[in-house]
Amino acid sequence: MIGRLNHVAIVVPDLEAAAKTYRQTLGATVSAAEDLPEHGVTTVFVELPNTKIELLHPLDDSSPIAKFLQKNPDGGLHHLCYEVDDIIAARDRLVAEGARVLGDGEPKNGAHNKPVLFLHPKDFVGTLLELEQV
Ligand code: CO
Figure (cartoon, rainbow, N blue to C red):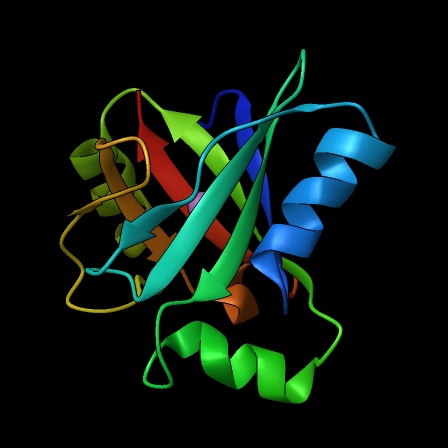
């Protein structure tokens, strides 16, 4: 059911510094920062030949990412995003399998303006998963 790895997301304490590390030190192509108020985050995408890295920073203190940074002040791996063809069919199959969808269970628009859902890390070997319909 899942397709390509769309991106790996890393929470960072300093978005500008992290973008600079990827652009200058690692020599990658790095996007401009974009605020996603619906998700409480600011994102920067690093374009790699085979996938992307999403750098995540809290938009404000109420962001779910703010709590993550309190626990992990240096930042760290946050989630993996897999592509699916049909996010509603994927969700219904996962729920039937006993997996928990975060939030109200309905897809929201993600960073690429495509529908996304998040799945509980306890159901997926300790890793928060994002599904993105492509
Ligand atoms: Co993501």
